Image: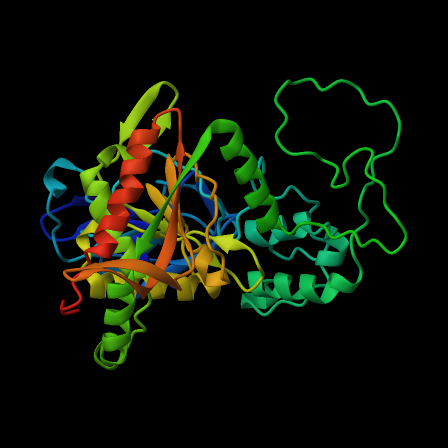
Length: 465
């Protein structure tokens, strides 16, 4: 049911007086994905299906997932076969129902209640199982000798790991009909790690001039002129690290970064959390971290300064209506991924806590779907979780700002009292706000981070959760 909400696919229908024939459409799998490969049909023609029941499994170069239907009925015709590459929006099956649909008389498209609204395509910092930059289509490889089917995702991984088709044919598969799944190929790559792929080292020979003035990513891992000494180890970047590197360079080339810093006194928040965290976990079965509290303050500040919640498109500024907060999550591999809390302003603190924990946990387990990595309008990264005092984060394009949350540390501070100033111990942290100086000037960038600090310092220590 959750997948159906995320995919937000469209159903077209055409009814007669007695029965309704509903077209099952290839759903949208996320930003920039225009087609998917049918891996297997979980149902066959003549099968009775319930609403929200998965009917087939599809694959893109980013994710493998099951597709449910929003209509109950009987599958009367399957129009796309296993292995077919189908464009988004194309009809793949016909379902006959005995319930007439609203809006059927005019043939209008009907979107599910929880369909995700369209946003302007936006690059994502890192994507679960994302291909490197400039690789947007499935791997082109020789036909398998055995006739075995491979999903685009598996082929992409094989290409990035320089696994030839002859070697891929030997990888044991645990999927249907011994199909190699993402888990299978990743396990094989890990096991194969003892035999690293040869890496090209730049040679001191003349190279032809590039045909284009725009250089995206270097083909050689070792820059020209870099010496390799005895005992040095050459480690090739994994796919996600290549994506992060490309996105970071792209962001720095696109946006002139300016960073403002504010120290915030979060003693009230620390004391309140210490007081209620056990009760909170007992009642909500969730751990109460600082992150949802910080998200709540940032959302409030965005409402005060909506021109932080914008994107740049050429010489146009797009002012976002929705407040979608991305949060950087460290993965066990050491890479980062940024799931997005869509419509963060519509959650209370309990809701934010559950959403933050859910996204973080599924990110570490590689269980996010593409739409949960897209659509962010402002991002936070918690460098304090690594004991860092502060950081200068890099903006996620096409957003215009990002905030780094430093470590919370006890410090001696001057406290104003009715009897005069005194020295006390306070819990403080540094907020680092990096922003795009093309459209965000120092006044706005500085006032915004100061406003976030004000909300944190004004936290109600007597509030209920």
